[in-house]
Amino acid sequence: MAQKFQTPSGMHDLFGKKTKYFDKIYEVVSNSARFYGFERIETPIIEDTKVFQRAVGNDTDIVEKEMYSFKTKGDDNVSLRPEGTAGVMRAYIENNMYTKPQPVKMFYFGPFFRYERSQAGRYRQFWQFGLEAIGKGCPTIDAQIISAVYGMLKDLGLKDVIVEVNSMGDSKCRGVYKGALKKYLKKVKLCPDCERRAVTNPLRVLDCKQCVEVKQNAPQIIDYLCKSCREDFKKTLEFLDEMNVVYDLNPFLVRGLDYYTGIVYEFFIKDEELPLALGGGGRYDGLSELLGGDERAASGVAMGVERIALAMEKMGVEIKEKKPQIFIAQLGDTAKKKCLRIFETFRKANIPVYESFGKDSLKSQLNQANKLNIRWAIIMGEEEAIKNSAVIRDMVTGSQDLVEIDDLLKEIKIRLKNKK
Image 1 (cartoon, rainbow, N blue to C red):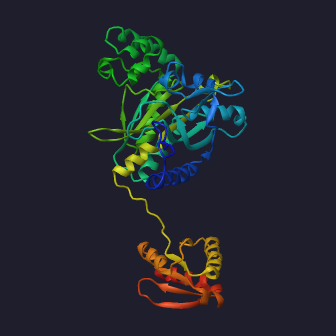
Image 2 (image 1 turned 60 degrees about the horizontal axis):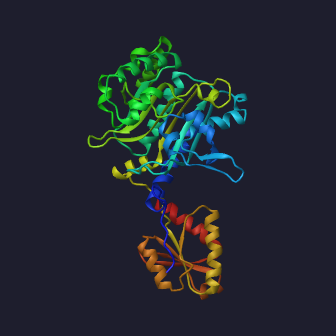
Image 3 (image 1 turned 45 degrees about the vertical axis):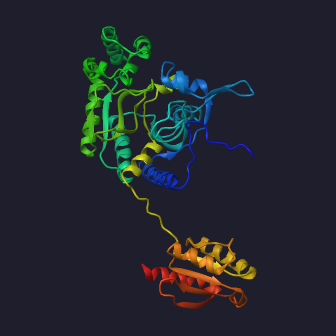
């Protein structure tokens, strides 16, 4: 017996109910994003490794532990993309998008890769969607991105959505805060990873799941914000209040990537047992320079599609589908040929139909139509095929009408309209 294969550890197949959630999420995201003026962008799954080393930061878990990196046959160092923002910014710079009206607003929806421990709604190949506004930064844009995603989650049927917000300040006030934080961290006991982080990047300690108690008495960055950062943060919160976005202030919230500046935020489903993190974002005004461009203000968000689908499933969100009400049944080769043509006629008219052309038994085809709760069956045997006609059977009342093939589409349209 040949060897059976399984998906690689931490990865999963998408099919059935899962794809229906994914399709619904994409539908809501793409429609809403375009309403807000975001155009779709898809960057390569593979990028030069330095794109992520410079953008995300060498001292982050993503670069240190989680990236899938390798050399190509041409000896290039590349990595599977672990996140979306760095690639979008690289595309912005490479394609001279700064010549367009600013900000350039883009959204993406696709797979990403991180080698990390698998858990509920988190995989080594995972899907994200994101919104990025590059070229201009202000509290209005930050608030509108938060509000757009908040609305998407509501439109997807999610309840108890909340946004945790904080400000990481700019490079100057954050530098002062880092000094105060380092001083504090010298006095407390840290896990082995955080002992190193306390020296290389102390903000990462605030994101550690093992050193939760350390945060309780740690200095808060909000107390170290300069006047400009404090004012921007205040305005953003005022805009969120105006748009009825529910948020909580979290003075220790930091994002896991080095390019963030100013406001940062994360979306959660409130749950007393286990709050479900859905994604987050913030300002990243310094990223363009890190990747070889000019200084460009920017703001963006990335959301986990698997996490959102998991939340939808837990909440019992139903995906309403427009199921076909027509079934084409045939008996004999001549009838099958003509039914194939009828099927294409309905496709061009954008009327969905079921069929089972692989079956030869008329009884089994009509049994399938009953199981699918079909209202009308178009039935053609050899005799009907010779006469260029077909029978329309009402599967509820059992009544039948013989109709010429050329009149089938018109007759079905009338019945569908009257049913409504």
